[in-house]
Image: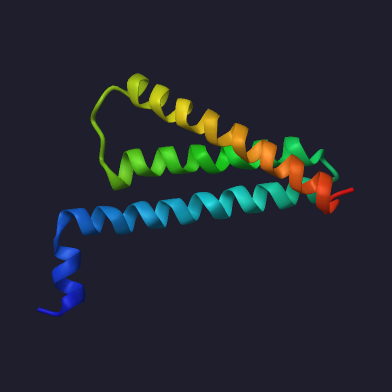
Length: 107
């Protein structure tokens, strides 16, 4: 068996690869939504927030169903996810605003 075959045979490695794929898809969703909204002249902070939220929902959905195949209660998982996401959104919002203020990327 090849090295790639041996690695993908391990549950943890398969789960990590799935997690990375889902994360990349969420980044793509976030990026596309953000740029689409910017194209239509939506406020930078609002466009960032909407893109971030939709990318996060994508990640939560696919990680729950495909990566981890979770059967736990949705309420507890969702509360944990939303807590972490709220902190990340706040930090991303502040960073985006500061970068735009100093670089004037989106006047």
